[in-house]
Length: 319
Image 1: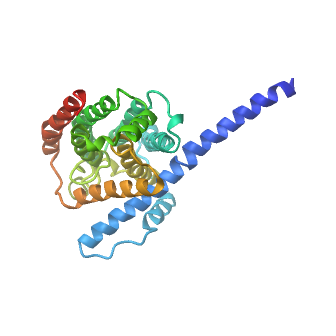
Image 2: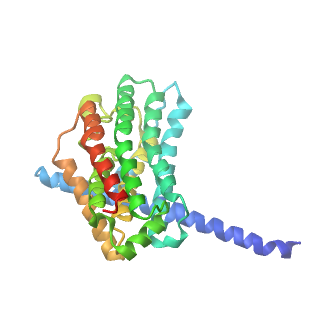
C-alpha cells in the first residue's frame, strides 16, 4: 500500500513545493516586494533630486519595513479583527497577482484560461482592504479617507475595465495572459495600434490611482487628513500596507507590459519597458498637484472613460 501511494505522494509534494516557490519566492511575494521597494526608492530619489535634495540611500525602504516590524501595534477597541486581518488580505491579493503575472511572462503556456479576469478581481482587493480597514477603526479622519477611496475606486475601475476589454478584443478575444503575449509576439505589440495607444493612456492614469500616487492620493492626503485610511495603523500592520503598495508598484507595470508591449520580453527589453513605465508614473506624480475627489471623479468618468470607449470601438473595428 505504501509503495502504491509513494508516486502520488511525491507528485503532490512536488506540486506543493512548486506552488510555494511561485507564490512566495519567485515571481511571487519576496521577489515582487524586493523589486517594488527598490522601485519605490527610485521614486523617492528622483523626487528628492527634483526638489534639490539628496534623497535616501537605496536600502531606506527595506530599513523602514524592518523598523516598522519592531514597533508596537496599537489596535482600536472596535472592529479589532477586521482591523488586524485587512492588511493581510490586501497583501495576499497583491502577491497572488504578482505570481500570476510573473508566471505568464516566464512560462506563457502555464497561464490558464480566464486568468485575466482573476487578475482584474484581485487588483481591486488591496483598495477594498484599505476601505474596510479604515472603516473598522472608528476614526473620523480614517472615515473621510475611506469615503474618498470608495469614490476613487468607483471612478477609475470603469475606464480601467473598458480598456482591458478593448485589449482582449484586440487580442482575438483572449482572456488568458499567455495568449495575449503569444498574439503580440506574432503580430506586434498592442500599443502600436490606435486602440492600444488610447487604452495605454487610460490604464496609466488608472494605475496611478490604484497606487495612490499624486494626483490621486486624496484618500491619504497627509496635509489634509493626516494619512486618512492609514492614520490608525502602526507597526507590522502598517508595514504590510507599505509592502502591498511595493508589490503593486512591481506588478502593475508588468501587467501593462503584458497587455500593451508583449512583442519582445527578453530580460533586457523587459527591464527597459518596466523602467520606462516607472519613469512615466514618477513624472506624473511629480508634475501634478493633488486633485480633489470630485475633480478626480469628473476626470475618470469624463475624458478618461471617453478615451477608453474610443479604444474599445477602435479595437472592435480592428484598429
